[in-house]
Image 1 (cartoon, chains in turn orange, red):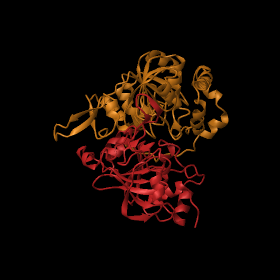
Image 2 (tube, rainbow over the protein chains, first blue to last red):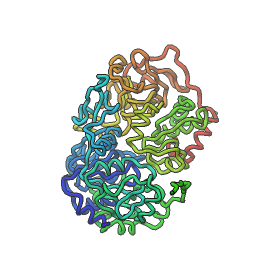
Image 3 (tube, rainbow over the protein chains, first blue to last red):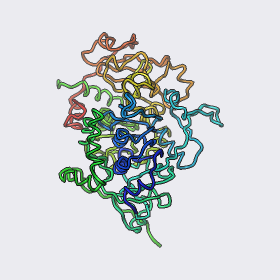
Image 4 (cartoon, rainbow over the protein chains, first blue to last red):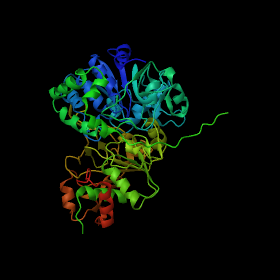
Length: 300
Length: 253
């Protein structure tokens, strides 16, 4: 167990290929903010959906390259910092490597399972392959037909936020499980951040819910509200108001940096960030309970 | 007759294309409304699958994004992103996929990547997401889009999702699993695709719309079906059901 500050200091280096996991759900904003605070540079950021967190990291100058499949503000529109980097080179130019969702999630699957490449029924007929040399075709050895393939993705470090983990990093995840498991197994190092740290007994009471076991984990961080303004199923809802405000905040590079100065550099950690959020907002984002029916594992 | 907005008409027309027991890959907004409307009317057994891995969702509010927690609570199943694309989409289990985009051409190719050159973008758009995967694998692609000259173009700046590419003859050689574009539904008309050539054909004009108006908003010379129909007005029942799905008019403005 360690703090996010310690985990980032120890496991994220300049020039790393970093994957902050989560498809809309459980995006580890607190980790992204800590990476900005520690002024990491020349990172290759990979995520299917860069979302607001990578928009912030691009604006803050952490990124050299982006590997992605959908760079939008989900349900709202554009990611303006991403666009500014591509359209105007501000604050600096950004290299891109672009896939479809299937392509990028397939790359993680291939990385996690140590495959040389993964064939998939997509990309052919699209203009993506001519602009991304990593998307190739091979002939199916059985039928001779041409099939698209993508290479494995093996990030240097992944950060995966989860609902609950034990102190060793055995992690229970539920809700939209996106690419969390694939990212953890594909990466050389894994930082688990958890809403709650629970006893090993709690984890062992429901092993089917453990998507990530301790032996692929390198650091465990207890970080409540790590994902705000994204959400955590059963813990807090997405702060949709903020997702809409982000569109305004990022109209200019300067206004974006003002936000980053106040909400990232202006606080020391996630606990201080949460103190800045109004109690009213926290209350509004807290869902009502909806428990599942318990299952009986049996014992002999 | 109750008045209705262009968005309401597009949703109603799209919903009518869905059949009971079909599986549909749904995005948020207009496609989500069309699928939910069909489910409440002629297709109670419609199976809704979301790109985020939620299957058979039973949302208690309008989903704010494709990954909204309300798509999980009460759903039939939730799987990972890779599994959604591999087991459901590539597995051939999705009948209908809804797509939209910044540009579409006469063969139903869609651009959601870039306006201008890829390497020097005038406007950089979000990119494929699952769109190219959906276009390559579903039995019917349905496109819902406003009918504007800047969207309907001779040639898309970037082919994010293949329609019939440069015509059906060459498209067949690509051996995609999907059956290609099926319908394009706009605020003016419904278009389908010629069996031989794969080119867009106007099959039905929406109430009060002339073929001249459709042509004015399309930069190429449009093909028109020999028996051009008029789209039936939305019924009271369709409108009432639809409005109950989006009472605060988030998408039905």
